[in-house]
Length: 317
Image (cartoon, rainbow, N blue to C red; front, side):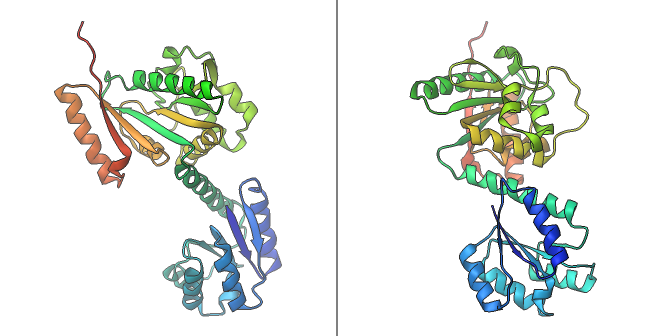
């Protein structure tokens, strides 16, 4: 992610630079003194940064006009205005003009939170448009449809194929935090779970990750749901995205088992998924649940071209 710093006052610049340095592994910082507004706009148009941190002094009391010019030069850039104090009139004018955020000292926590969210979103978008890395998810219409079993078989087969080509591995992740069965089905021995990974997202590295996953199948690694129910709170969207972004950086295929219910938590997962496989059995209740889930997805503006339906038929005993 590219962040452009156009900050006139040294105290604001120092604080902003400190925030960016903490994200040095994910953010490229470019600076401009904006001594000439026309030259600055040309520079901005060439750079097309994801984020622009700009000192409000550069607006020179013509906020709406200057913000409009910035948006013309770089339409997709998130504009963050910095000032040394809270100015209600300037905040209102800036927000009307299209400024996303307005911060004044101390900048550290609020500015860093916004930059971290932008980095997470940028990384996710990169992977979603990368044809070499895919994330697929399996959601059961109701309990007993076999979604978890299908996810396990698909992951094992993908792992075999990746192992034969000698390329990337496959990850099977059990994201059903309250009722996941992948630990049992795949005989996972790792003591940690995907919930631990989510809670340690900021400090997640290769060594920590390797302690959390288990192997034993060719080309496949597994990260399980918690072994026991001890969930004090559901993970935040940012925690989910960090783990999925980390997984996509290591595996060509990431397979998620979402369990059998559509919740705000699972909807957060679906934002990072290339394809959703809805698994149902051929009974009336299961097909009714399929209809309900599809309706909920549409209500949340989830595109239907990313959804596939699997009708899982099993022999009667």
